[in-house]
Image (cartoon, rainbow, N blue to C red; front, side):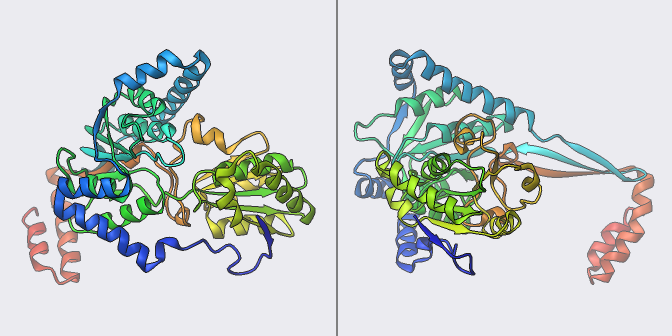
Length: 417
């Protein structure tokens, strides 16, 4: 981790996904699976992961977790499930009807998406928490069918934690296939993997690029948001504990060597202490070393300047390690999630606070929020009119149609006059 000047371009993100050779490689995998179906999926999975896709039953591996894990571990997973469920069920959107003028009513009604695909990362670590963060809002939305994929394990089974999370969510089986090939299979179908209407979930650069690609292809699915690789910005003032800030930074860096980690400090001395603490703690967390080698610390003159930097960079996760964080929260417009004060670890949001940890990355927080119940639903407008209202609006509607030169529209309206 190095200290850099706060100047234009200092916090530019790394651009692996913009490399033409990388994009071509992703497009090749997606195209082969789309065109070749199951046989192509098997070939790509064996080439990349060393194993053909399998539909693995959850129950035996969940039973292993229940039999072998200590009670406090099981209780922690169940607590996470309960909190995330409570939050998403409480935030399910409600239908709304508005009488825009006497007798003319417009309603917004919510419908669940029929079939969705969930990508659960399993590279450096099997992220059972991601399964909870995706499946629970999908269930709260009322999705009819949920397809789950996760990269294969060397033993050919499922990680017990992923299996237990799936069992808690009522998911009976999971496909063991990962990467761009898994995204393509869910997008266009392959063998028994039926095509889905929407794909959700974070992943590495291969997964994120494949999601963006399939969503732009003819007949492809929608996607939740640009999610991955992971990001964290920490804004820290003199009240921050350097060791705690370093631990927060490392918590994101250990996800992926492409993870983006940034410290914004109000004092040079604080930045130096955090950099030293990062080096000290890295010995225990070697998985974070690659990402931390590219991590940056920026020294600013004020918290207002820090907030401006945060809004410009639009981080996935933003931790406010400052004495009076409430003063900054309302000023933050662009962040996937904000962690307020010294007592709130970003890890709380990753696991059990309640909101989903699937959040926008790469600056997408300027326009996107994280995964919610609404991510698995769609809005339908429903219009009703009394005979009197139809007659009242027919003339104005026809007039507006003719302003656009659309005579057929005008006549259709006038038929109701």
